[in-house]
Image (cartoon, rainbow, N blue to C red; front, side, top):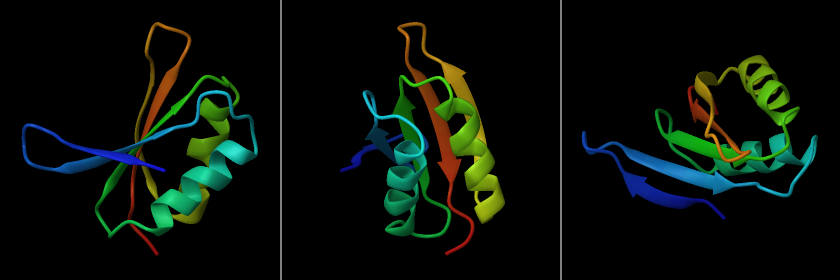
Length: 87
C-alpha cells in the first residue's frame, strides 16, 4: 500500500516500497497503485531489483504515463517517480 507525503510545493507524492519484489510484479503493483490515483498525481516507486529500473519506466510510458525520474539511491535501492497522465 502506498504511503503519502507532501513536497515543499504542496504537491502530494505517494511512495510505494517494492523492495524484495521482482519483475513483472514490480510493474503490476505500480500500475495498480497508479490506477487508484488522480490524473497529475506522482508515485515514487522504490525497488531493489535493478531490472525494474528499466521495465517499470518502459511499461509506464507504453501505458501513457510520464516517467519523471529514475535514480539510484546509493543504498542498493532505486527510486522511480511516475506521474499519472491517463486512466
